[in-house]
Length: 227
Image (cartoon, rainbow, N blue to C red; front, side):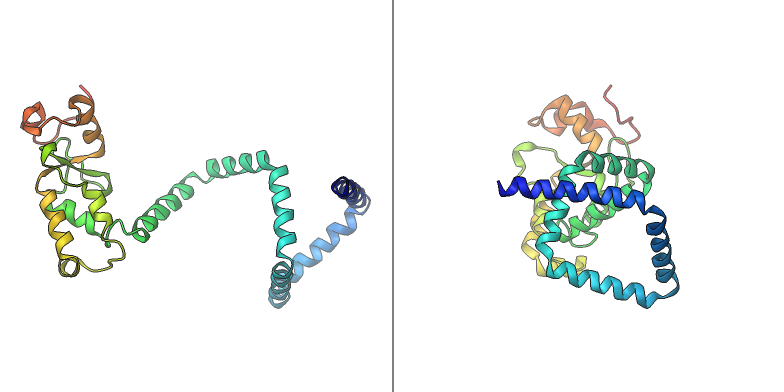
């Protein structure tokens, strides 16, 4: 019952505010222009207002959060449409931010000490042995030539270097055992780009030895497509 009364009061207040805004539109717009001029001409006024607003929000945080949650629930579809439109208009900026975010997450989660995969890929040839791709180390995979000799996944082993910000020479000292294990495992592998790696497993499955396939005679410059 109390909830119904609250909703009724909220609805009446919303109707009243809409009518008040309609009748006093010119005065409201004038006040907005004055506030905009103050923000532009008196920076201290703007900073002071922001400080007061932050303080009020801090004191009444539960009320603010409840109001925002109600607004989001009521305007969920509008929010989605605006977000889609924003991503469409600012596609390049959104993609750039997403790439930066993913790179930051990789570093924070410790997938690599800075530059470690780039270094490891370069040490193993630096390019896909089938198609010659060499633009980005994050597009490269280490494929085990003999599946029965595989002891671990290199990407998971690299993830164990978490929190290591050391350079390559320091990594060998601080993470010596793990470093040796990664290097030993990489010697069992050939370097393929993600596309070629997926194509290989599509054609030959996951238990076929490298030297038992037609790919073992390939060098580079082969088209990265399924023939």
